Image (cartoon, rainbow, N blue to C red; front, side, top):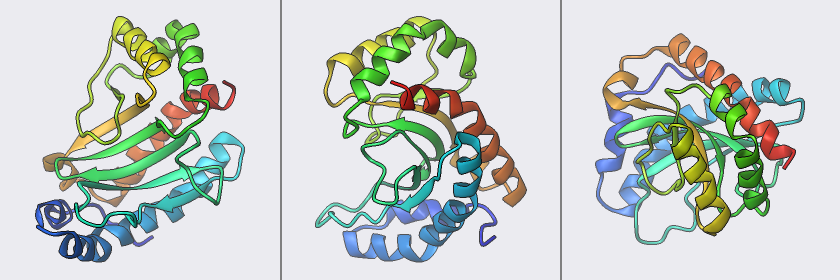
Length: 206
């Protein structure tokens, strides 16, 4: 596997000025690692969810001016794309690595999923580890741990606000991420995905 971990150089990509210079650095340093992670974890996730899972490395092809502030590989049960589907992600901001389950605003059954989450609130709260963080916007790096009341509010927001999203998983701060080796990453990602499978299953059944 062509992945040994993330380095300071990977995170420094997001400090490079200009779309073309940043994209050039992203393609040469981070993208090969995301490709390797995608190739490795697609079969793992296929086995976990009982469906064929494909990986999609972010291309940032629509950008014409602003350089990307984050990048990722996403996993979904379609060769054509992932944004309209419940999916998993591994990616980087300049401040941290994220390992997510995500249902973003393009997904047509996002509202139904949030309604299902609200109905199953106690189960969700008991199933998802309390140290996992949640977000309602994949365009922002901020996320936080939520108690049961916070989860209920998040699910209400996703039901009522078209742009609101459901993202859940782990963030690993840069200073920790650059100290981790290949086996630590593989074990952590594998364990995180396993703990997020119940959310994926709820999304598929909503």
